[in-house]
Image 1 (cartoon, rainbow, N blue to C red):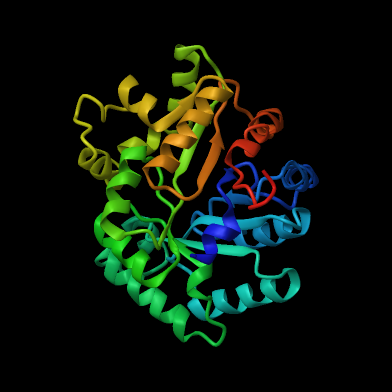
Image 2: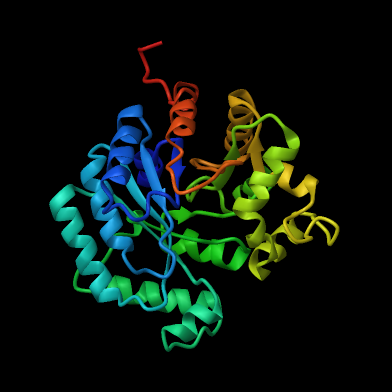
Amino acid sequence: MNNMKRTLGTVGIWSMELRGAARPEVREAAAELDQLGFPALWIPGLDGPGALDDVEHLLVAAPRATVALGVLSMWGQDPSTLGSRWAALDSAYGPRAVLGLGVSNAHSAANAGQDYGKPTVSMRRFLDGLDAAPHPIPTDRRLLGALGPKMVDLATARTSGWHPFLVTPEYSAVQRARVGEAPLIAPHLAVVLDRDPSRARAAARDGIGTFIGFPAYRSNLARLGYGEDDLVPGGSDRLIDALVAWGDLDDVADRIQAHLDAGADHVTLHVLRPDAGADLPRQQWRELATLLPRFTPRTPGTE
């Protein structure tokens, strides 16, 4: 079995709010998520500043959870330095950190003084650097932020799997049929715990609508059958409904199950709120924790 599948479990929390984990209230929230039973906490790595510090704070605050960067831009990262920092985290806290890497975009590459080039070629070169580093990050502790088939194939060959953003269950079904059972597929799933369609869709658009305009996501959604009428600013109702689990807890559970049935191994839940502000969505996380028993594999002999 892919070790990452066992490490991450079935359902995790993805949170922008868990960045900035130097703040006591963030560490307190992470500790509660650990106590609630979430096996994995995901934070966006973005372009890198402070990301590894946040990982360390969360490893301390949530001593049973895996902490995953989903994902860190490869631009501006030195493979040797990254490997050494990862080795230090392992030494201090055990092998509980997972590195997700992404190619981001040409703007991020230029800001780091590098040439974007062909995404898969650039990522392959970076993975070569990780493998050659004095402290290489093991293959089974790294993922890629992948969408298209070329990057998915690279993830399958050189990492434990991939973490796709803005995808439907149909995406996992298509890719699972392509790559077989071995690699991990861990999709991001935005969640709005609100049964009112207008409020829920508005919260979804506020949270993820901007990304629908990014070329990589547009291309992937087009491959999944969404046309120009769907790929409007903020996304059509049909597209939002396909990408976001909104409604009550049963609605969210149904959407998680749809991803799992389609071939995903782990689903990362990203809470969006109609009244989103600086506060952490702790009440929503507590509600989502009540779903965990539905998705925890039973140990033989305990039924």
